Image 1: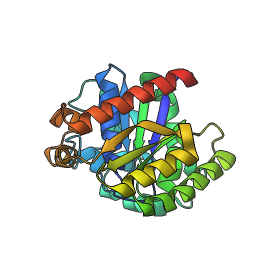
Image 2: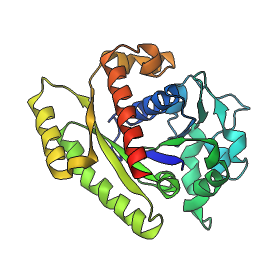
Image 3: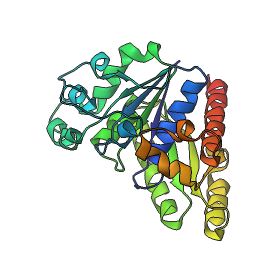
Length: 257
């Protein structure tokens, strides 16, 4: 069964897009067929994989407003086994255009259904909000991964996000599960980072991934080169952490199957 993983957090700057790109890359590296869908109008997942939009490039926006089918908006990347549905700034207006449309929360789900057999994993990078774009992603998904920066304010927003996931489970997608929380931007020299990590593990126990993503300058540099950090510098600490995280994801997927 295809695992459809949403990477979501309503707080920006937590490493959400970086996590989406590098999870997708790591899964493709172990010969899984992976589709990355960029649902964020900022299109950082697209540029982070070297995909720049031209006038002829069809994006997730064209799919959502029903001007293209899913097969038309899927584009190959330079990474074997990894395809992408890119985003564009046009997506900013999609929520307004779709607000009156019947079944607007199920557009992505309907579009993905015929293509699920073509991929082992579909990874969806969401905008930092709980609007219609994120709702579409969660209605289509089987699970959610939450990147959580190790800081005080991040903890405050986590309970809100988990409540939102529960509401979506009840109203739209009973199969949606919290896959796990991944601690990002971890600085072992900071006592606050360690305290936040301990608090999250204490409250959510096995829902927190063992792997922690460290603060790492190579991770920060990679997007400016249009590459995942796994391609930019495979030996750096950030790359090693994302490979470890992908291994955990594969193991959890096998257990759940």
